[in-house]
Length: 245
Image 1: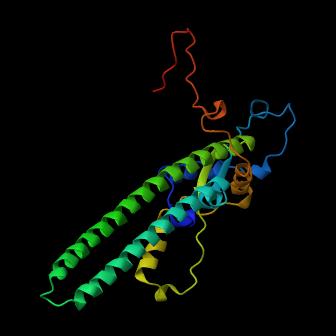
Image 2: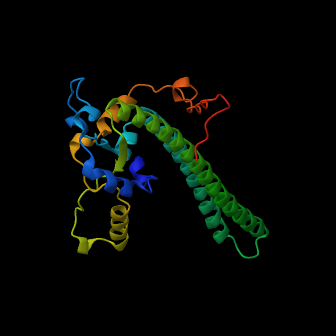
């Protein structure tokens, strides 16, 4: 199961405005040529514009080995639960047929009907129970993957002197005429376009490949010092950490 089929939006509510403000002055990563030491914004009088990068989040996650392993485990549990529910449904169908073959006055019919009603309730309960378990595991899995992605994007961005990374999503051209699409598909595609953050990005500023390559090697553990939250800097007079407004 692809991440693109599960998580289709990314929480960048202000990304579009940020792109509008910076796109005009952004320069591609690939265009960053080495400058002599004497060349600086102060010396030249030119202010260096921030570098903008983009990333295809779904593509990066789909190729992340940790996600693939976790996704396989969740899918295996889903298949197991589905098989259990399928077996229970088959047993209920057999019991229903047996009840229909019984005469109205047969003493065992009342007991069989009771078992059938209890079986339906048990099946419905287990279906909801399994769905809740899988939904909780899915969320925990995605949180772990997103935290890893967050770490990797920051590392790659800093390495390439990228100041801002925005999410992009490629939307393939529909294979059939729009007039022939089902209303649900039309609505879904319109919503995808409406949520789109980046409408165009040159390949020179796309860091998706670099992030995928970085995440192919095991990342530091979440408890490692390298991934520990940054500690507040002490104030100049040593009175304590500086609080930001």
